[in-house]
Image (tube, rainbow, N blue to C red):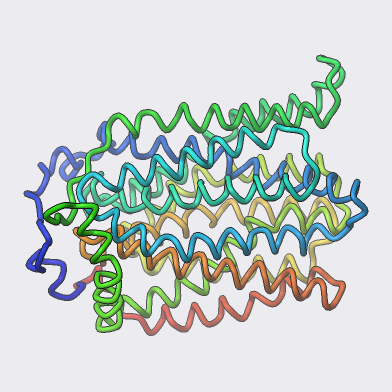
Amino acid sequence: MPDEASNGRDCGVESPKPADSNALGGSSTKLTGVEKRWIVYDVGNSAFVLLSTAVVPIYANSLLRAAGRTNIVSTWGYAQTIVSIVIALLMPVLGSIADIQGMKIRFFIGFFGTGAVACCALAMPLSWLPFLILYMLSAIGLNGSLTFYDSMLIDTTSNERMDKVSAHGYGWGYVGSTVPFILCVALIFAGPQALGWNTADCTRASFIITAIWWVAFTIPLLTGYKQTHYRTTVDRIGSAARSTFFELARTFGRILRNKPLWMFMLAFFFYIDAVNTVISMSTSYGTQLGIDSTQLVTALLVTQFVAFPCSIWYGRLAGRFGTKTMIMVGTIAYLLIVFFAAFFMRTAVDFWVLAICVGMFQGGIQALSRSYYSKIIPKDHANEYFGFYDIFGKTASIIGTFLVATATSLTGNASMGVLSIAALLVVALVLLALQKDLTKQ
């Protein structure tokens, strides 16, 4: 387990009394009310994730083409890179302050609110550059809120139930996000004839629908969350601001002294690169190959339905075979997915095969990474540690999207960009094989 920092004896750290085990679901197989309120935010934010994966790149591509630009893969890749850089720089510092009692929910609201407002603003008639700037703001808001949301898992449930609850979050997020997405897609394709709107207007309306859904499914978490693990200071914010960089340096030192922890973080750095890059670049890559937008959107919708049972199933398998083992299985699967995308994906049928395979492993590897990390870090410094988690996760996204964009620009072949991330997955597998599983101690 993590070093002595986890016992709450550090200066300025208060370890609150443990919550009742039944309240955290420690002795029940059913999801508790607190767990359900946490899970439901995944239902809300996943609607924007799905829209930004399937619809936003296609709409951005139409704006780019109208301006005489044709390479959506590189442009979209650079936009994703900027988002990742901002999150990687902000989250460790803000995460340290958010570990103060009552601060986590405030930062969560700030980032969630920014993302939802920017999502609505995408509905304004814009040229490609203002549209991409607003999209990046909404993506920063989303990813920032997810940092604090992920760390809320330790306040929501017990160690024994983290795999299950985290998997349910991703699973219900996938299937729940299809409701507004189907409505948006129906509006985009049927709206011009049924309502007399043009396709661009229908697409803009879909951004507003998604933002409303996101807000509606965030309310239960806002009204039901209580931070039970935190550190306190005399004057809270003022003291936190002064001690932030000291705390970050101390946390970084703890990570370096905990070999199994930093080895997992390095492995996570490499394998989550593939996951995030495939998610963020799949539609733009398919568009570059000339696959019809209807096929792209429909295939990604099917992915959500595949991901729902597979995420739940993945959480159950982790209970039987171990969380780390199932993470390795997901990494191997993604290696095969990358090879398939680079060498074999050329038609709409190929994209359907790719989408279904991604759905089988995407939610599982994300959910178990979150729960495994939550188990092996000090609970009173969760946001601080999740800040570093985001450095590794988002920096990997920077490398992945930048690598794909640059390789595509230099070679003129998007397949070479996709192939380049296979090496990162191999490195991740080696690190996972060498890392000692802290959850088995």
